[in-house]
Amino acid sequence: MAEHAHKLEILRGLIKFKSNTQKIWGVLILLSIITIVEVVLGIYKPDVLMGQFLGMKILNWIFIILTIVKAYYITWDFMHMRDETKSLRRMVVWTAIFLICYLIFILLQEGGYVFDVYEDGYIKHNF
Amino acid sequence: MCDFNNQTLFMDTTVSTGTEGKTWGGGNQPLKASYGKMMMWFFIVSDALTFSGFLAAYGFSRFKFIDAWPIADEVFTHIPFYHEPAPMIYVAFMTFVLIMSSVTMVLAVDAGHHMKKSKVTFYMFLTIIGGLIFVGSQAWEWGTFIKGDYGAVQTKGGNILQFVDTDGHRVALRDFVVADDHKERVQNESKNGIWFQSEGSLPSYTMEEVINGLKSHDNVLVRTQILNEEGEKTVLTRAESLNQIQNNGKLVVEGANLHVNEYGSPLFADFFFFITGFHGFHVFSGVVINIIVFFNVILGTYERRGSYEMVEKVGLYWHFVDLVWVFVFTFFYLV
Image (tube, rainbow over all chains, first blue to last red; front, side, top):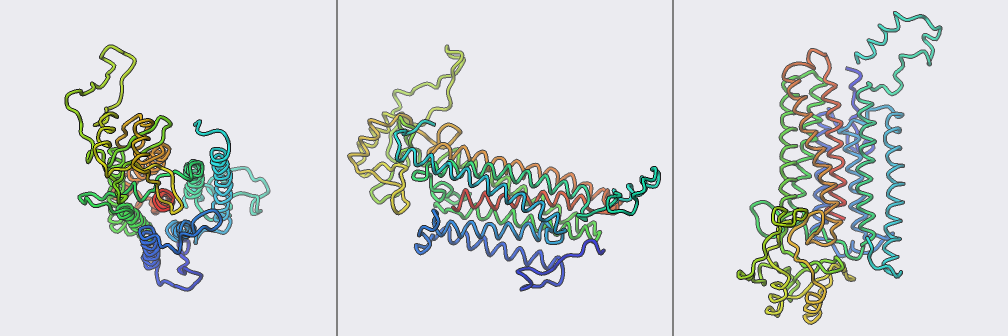
C-alpha cells in the first residue's frame, strides 16, 4: 500500500529502521532513555546544574528541552507527522507553537511582575 | 478514502462548470489526508491550546509566588504498599505506563494498515489496559494528595506553617500533638439549627492542642514556605516558632482541597486538581472511545469497511493524551 509508506529514519538518518514496527520499538527505547535521565536528574539534582541561566535553573532548562524532544518523537513517529505533507505539518505545528509561545510569554511576564509588586511595592497580599 | 469516491460519483451527476481538471475544479487533496484525520489534527491543536492555557496559568501563579512555591519532590513521595518517602518513582511508573500504551496503540494502527484483525484486537486490548492502569494510578495519587501526610497550620494571612525536628526532617501533627478527648467540638451540620450553614469535616486537632503540643516538645520547630538561597524552606528558631504558632496560627490543615492545602499555597492544589483532573478526564474518555473501537474491530466493522482508519484517528487522540502528560509530568513534578 503506497499511501502507508513510512519514513524509517530518525535522528536525521543516523538510525535507520528496517520496518515500521521496528521503528516504533526504537522510538520507545529512545523515549524511555530520556524519561530515565529525567527521573535520575530529578532525584539526585546534581549541584553543577543548580546554577541560574536566563532566569531559571540550568536543570529546569534541561528538563524542558528533554520534554520538547520527547514531544517531537511522539508527534513525529507515533502520530506519523513525519509521513504527513509539509503543509499539514506546518499548519498544525507552527500554529500551536506560535500561540503557545505567545501565551507563555504574556502569562509568565505578568506573573513575574505581580511577584515584584508584592516584593517591592506596598501591597502584601490581596488575591 | 471512500469520501473521495463519493465525490467523484457526485461530480458525474452535476452540471459541468467548465473547471474540471483545473486546480480549482474541486476533488483535490492537497494535504493528502482524509477529512476525519485532518479534523482530528485540528481538534488536537485546539485542545493543545487549552492545556497550554492551564499550564501557562500554573506558570503565572508559580512566578507570582516564586519564593514560596511548594517543592514537588516533598509533595509526591508516595508509592502504594511502600511507606518510605520516595519522590518521582511512582509518577515515573505512570509515565512509562502511558508511553507503553502509546506504543501498543501505534502497533495497532500499524497492524490495521496491514489489515490484520486479530493483531489490531490484541494491541487495542493492551492499550485499554494501559489506560485503565494509568487512570487508576491517578485516582490513587489524588486520594493520597487529598488525605495528606504531615498536617500543617494556616496563619491568619493564609500562609502555611509546617513542622520539622531539629535535623530538618518533617514531623507530623500526630507525632507531637495530643488530642484532648474531653472537649470535642461537634461538627456543624445544616440540620442543627443554623440551616444555611454547614462545615467540612473537622481536623483531628484543634489549634489549642497544636499550641500545647508544640510547647511540650522542645525539638519541634516551625518551617515556613519561604525558600532560602539553597532553594530549601526556611526553618524558624524555637522562640520564633512558638511566637508564630501562638500569634498567627488560625487553622489546622490536614491534606488538600480547593480551599486549603497543607503542602503550601492553595493555588498549587487547585492547579493540581484542575490540570491532572482535566488530563485524567481525557484519558478516561480515550479509554471509552478505545473500548468502542475495540468492539468494532471485533465485530469486523472496519474489516468490512476495508480500512482501519478509525483506529488511526482514535490513535491520534490517544497519542495526544500521552503528549500532554509528558508536559504535565515536567511542569508539575520535575521543574
